[in-house]
Length: 445
Image (cartoon, rainbow, N blue to C red; front, side, top):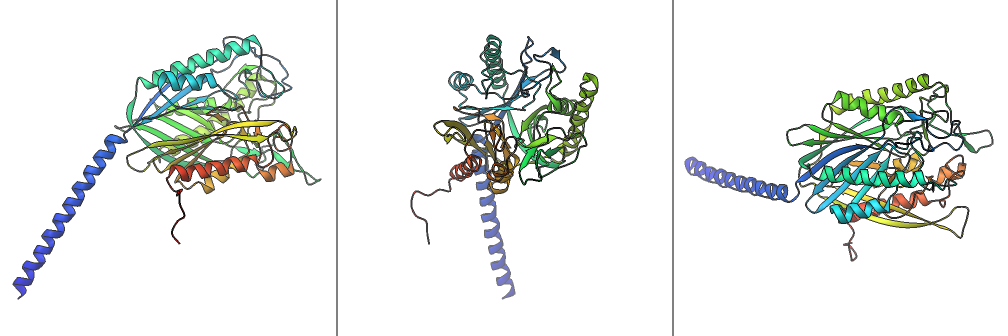
């Protein structure tokens, strides 16, 4: 009886093992198919975009020195091209104050078959002014020529990246360091006003001190690109500076590339509309001021380099790339007969990485809203990023900040109250759509 029971037990074991092997083989087959269909590929390139002429500079309405008088450090456009199946996305980070170009978007789509272009500016105030914005028409011949040059250079860089694609995998890591302060301080009258120069480096809050790293590796584990997401205005240099410079993001990227050979470091500015850097160069002495820029960049770079070692792969293949682009119409806050068109794009890579883009200067609470509410392990916020038709939205405050006021909240902003939250709610709605979670009929009780 025991022998018979033993045989029966062995039969059960054999059947169970056979089922397990079959399941394992089926899993391998599914994985192989997914790998073939959803193989992520990437390409990287860069091009210098420093103007050859001394142009008017961006950022400061009352710049003390007028046009640029030279270059301290070069300005770059850096490209990361991602491809999965038929989906292709070009992300371009730029050492510029802002960048919008319908011409470039159309050319990249029609000539390179890349339907989605993200133009993400670091918002350095030591770059040339060449786009129409606010009271600055930027209609000069030099501005038009530089924009055309930019469009040509960026197109060629994207084309170069498309010719050197490699199988890729993505990884993410997080770190935190407070190198910014919230410049909208509440005053005795109960209203907020901006503190632009915080030379005592008081860490006023609230801020979002987190930085997120997105690593792009080849299949041998070599890091080919490292995207650094952080939120702090690139205004270490003040209105006395007359040299072209990428400000602290330039130092950051150079130091990271020096420490991790073969890696292209790319800075992505977040919700920095109300966040100034703790390090501010306001002496008016060029050598001293650039030392301050160097210090801020090096401090952030040291944390990024240390955190780079903890980058962990995102979920296995397939890494599909999906997106939803919207053009939203908002009322002008002050001129009720005018409207503003704001183009946004929500991107979902696999099921883990969700990107929200905003073409303007969003305040940091909008970034926090996205990171807290986006139903994805890695929620990335791309402020100062143009992706579709529509103009530059300028400062985009959250409702609370708009109520308390201050620069960018109820001054130097022109978009309707509540537009920031409406933009983020559309991103959240799009994210669930991209995940296939909206039903076309009522759900089960």
